[in-house]
Length: 432
Image 1 (cartoon, one colour):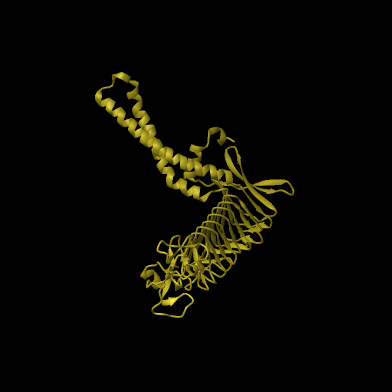
Image 2: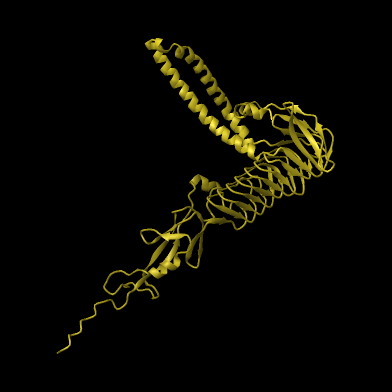
């Protein structure tokens, strides 16, 4: 039997692929006006999830690994396809190809990096040195690391932690997590810093600093507004001047200065709750007053029962509708205020511990009562507030000698907070 004749091999002799190269796409999204002032230029390569960050370009007339050839093809006349292995080598961490197979997208928010023809995204921002005209303002979902300073008039907004090894100047820094101002804050009355977590700073000078958690300062606080949702601790220094509100109390070496520079220390007070009460208590009291009035209007009509005429029945329906509306609005406000009030109560610490000296001229304030220090109080001393015969009394306690004496105290009314406590605190608790 004769063997079958061999069939001709019609497959391509060489599966040629087109050479490719990486092209980084421009990332600036600021308006022409913003770019013109150089504050909002995106010079750090910050990208968002799903943002195109690079594109794979096919090199015309060149096969991968071959010299340029204007007639390069797969052998059957069709143009060569991009080399898939070369494309894979271009994809670093946290990126993916778009459906077109050539556009590279970020899969996380972060900072674009490119090295040796490979593009990737790191999920945090690392500034090379300072936040200034070389970087522009920073707005980022994640953590930010800054080895230098944040210069005057620049802003840093991050949802995560922000670490700044240099100085925060007259700038704005907002951290959704912790803020580490390791070089200190020198604000010249213009710096505003906010943190959703804890704050650590070398010093704070002429700045506004607001933390939902605790604040730890190494050296001193001077001429600053401090709002602390936890405990304020000065590890090796003093609170010299300014206005401090610390829900979780204060620990410091010295408080005030021998020169008597004005300083107000508020202890066990939640500033956001105070602002919330001031904004909403007038509305709540108005709704409660409306409810009382509507009840009074309804009472005689309901008392008549079946003897109501058609117009009176219609009036009862209207009054019930108004009452339900007022009750709903009052209930929503009550829920919001009660939640904030209970959270503040659970975190409040009504004390200040000073190891050195509390200087004359310092005003120490608790809820609705305050004292102005008239003579130096030598430490270690603990300042507390208790209720005596229904009135607040401020005490200076020497825990070593186990003695205490009361300080001249005077009322400091806070109408919104007083009304809030009256509504939310049961009578039995009030007398405690």
